[in-house]
Length: 394
Image 1 (cartoon, rainbow, N blue to C red):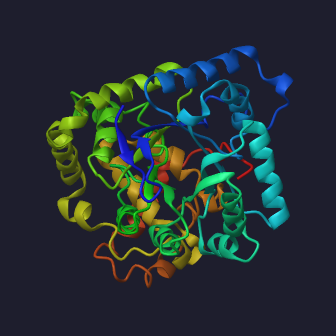
Image 2: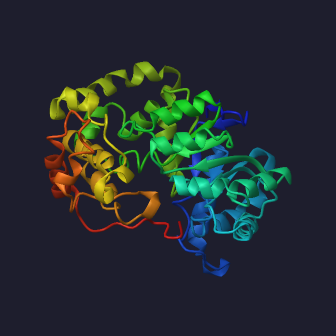
């Protein structure tokens, strides 16, 4: 395993982290007696395999159903000083509710402290204000830090790049959990802001939100050869020193194998991925036009600035990936969350939009005339059954 300094925490964190949202029995809270023996055995085998590989950062959340509780069956048996444990709690309506939720997390985990504690889902300006308000989540977390029950405070976010940067500029956090990968470069300015402030960068869900890479289309497999798409994406992210760790949502012990194999190239990442990145970008240029690939996102407003809150930026991204790299299945998974995931995946899809109303907000785009037709095509390609977030408590 390789390790990187996790920003101002000064902790050496493994470049791969063990995410806790795939191996649990349920996305709902369960009674201990309702956990099947086989599921618990698999979870424990997954954690033991993680530790064998040097992946000692184990990450979970109050919103991940039985994950915390099932981890708590195992953690007291392990050497606590060798573990880096992270959990996350969303902002709550009251200080009392937040603290009660924290106490529940700690009882579930059976720990005296957590190394990393995230305010979960600072996804918009309202949630940031709620977090920073007197008696809010940040003040609670800081109290817990003074008491020694929380070592480092961070935040997770599914917000827009601008909203992430505003949260980073508060300088209230030591690390951030965010989305950034080959298929989504939109948050790079936020990553650079984190680097400027010496804030640790934890990449959320590179396998799933990074392109559903565990089920890649044949075209992507071919373009990434001789690496797998997952291995390419791992190395693409880790080629940037500003990125410190990638979360792997392992559901079983063998889920680490492909990523460990990718790390064989860790000392030669630029040369290993250069030709693959060239091939991918050349194919995107061929399919979409180099002018589009270089400029499509420029002067596109965020969803909250668009009539009907149509998430144009996200729809154009998904359309581009579907048209050029055959990431249709991934696009459908994400597109059909629009309108169904609240602030976790905000904005609306293009099922119903008013092209006339969009014209003023698209005036600064070089592709203003094309975008309404692209939105219609994206809806035709990607619309399917409505998708709900797995974690309905968030």
